[in-house]
Amino acid sequence: MTDLEIARSIIPKHIFEVAQTLGIHSEDLIPFGRYKAKVTHNLEERLNARPLGRYVLVTAINPTPLGEGKTTTSIGLSMGLCRLGYRSVVTLRQPSLGPVFGLKGGGTGGGRAQVCPMEDINLHFTGDAHAVSASHNLLSAFVDNHLFHGNALKLDPQGIRWPRTLGVSDRALREVIIGTGPDRRAGQFVITEASEIMAVLALATDHADLRQRLGRILVGLTEGGQLTRAEAFGCAGSMAVLLKDALWPNLVQTLEGTPAFVHAGPFGNIAHGNCSIVSDRLALRCAEYVVTEAGFGSDLGAEKFFNIKCRTSGLRPDVGVVVATLRALKLHGGGGTAKAGTPLPAGLTRPNQMALEKGCANLEQHIANVRSHGVPVVVAVNAFKDDLSDELNWVCERAKAAGAEAAVVSTHWADGGRGAEELARAVVKVAAQEAQFRHLYDVTWPIKKKIETIATTMYGAAGVSFLPQAERDIELATRMGFDHLPICMAKTPLSLSHDPALKGRPSGFTVPIQELRILAGAGFLTAVCSGIQLMPGLPKRPAGERIDVDPQSGEIVGLA
Image (cartoon, rainbow, N blue to C red; front, side, top):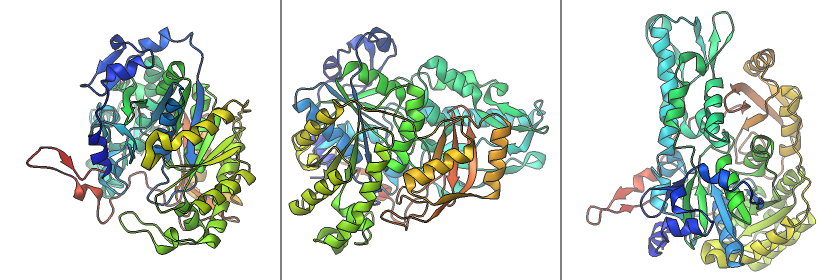
């Protein structure tokens, strides 16, 4: 059965019934049909007296293009915890239309470890992503309207740093020309999930904080070199209005009826890669265990979770789960290349102990990355049907030797929550330890020192080089007082390094930084590695070619 067929084979609970398991009443919900709802912020105030649950972060090794199953592991673990009798919630990001119609397909999990309604969540859901695009582009329109009507702020058209956004992948929009006449200038589009508004939505703690962050957004510089923020164009209030309902978390469920908050969707490689603070904070008041996923490997989403999201939220993780697969470990050991849409090479499917042993160096770095933040590690070896038990068990032993507190094989994709019960037991045991959480760097450090610390500690780099544009950007950010902000690294997810071809645990490389972007509203600086695009392109055979509406039944087909 396909993921879509599996999702349609179950009968979901009414969303009111799902909410009741968390002590959430129907009056706290804004339902979107029978199976999804917004949860209002009034609930959090009422639950403030409740103790916080355990906070579990799911991250991974560097993935193949097919992914390592962080989402399925997060969902499976949450279901496994419920099967053990614990009140559990999984918190996830909303999938992006870019991957849905592009390379990767949907982002609601797979097999027996999915959240539903699958089609709704992967497509329009409750409209949050559309609200982000509208809010972002409203500011773009107000900026150009200001220039057209005389430019009273003396904004330098060539110094405008605010792009436009679109919710699907379109490489033709990476560089565009905007306007005519004297205001004609170079511009660009970024995908919605890489926009600052999406980052703001994920990091805002309430509507007042959201409004303040929107007003602080840096649009550009005046002819005299002064900062110009969104507040100056008179539309920050309207931007907040467009996002008013989007800030409320979305409640859905897993295939086994476990509650799930799916909210906000910043990319893990070019944005901060974590779901919203409001959903995590609410979930921690409602549940004994909250399982949340950070995008891509520990070098990206988890590092940003620890050093950006946790700084803002004040929340502290109890345990980190690092997901690994045999196919990815063999890939990192030189066993072959895995490409989306094609069969796996023989070296990734048949026994290849030499590649597996060599590839485990990548896993060891990711274990070290999580432990460097004072967080104990459980390794989840995500098993596929053709994997050999001897190899799976060997990886578990290797992970424990590398510093993991526990390492278990999980079969949640095939078996749902039942296949993740052993993982759940390990997480409960390790989470009971007293984590000594700490940030990787002090935000008061100089910008270059923060970037170098991330590169050398998390990636294993020998150092960092700064291209001329990055040098100018760092000088400007320092001069304008933004040097105290944390760093959001934008780099490839396919390698610990900046180069996707460098597999395993490379060393001796230098990370090149091509530019530094000031995201004053989100509250961080984005250091962009050479070659990174903020607007993805479609592959030769996009997933959207397989998606259609059945003319007889009217149902969606081909969505995966």
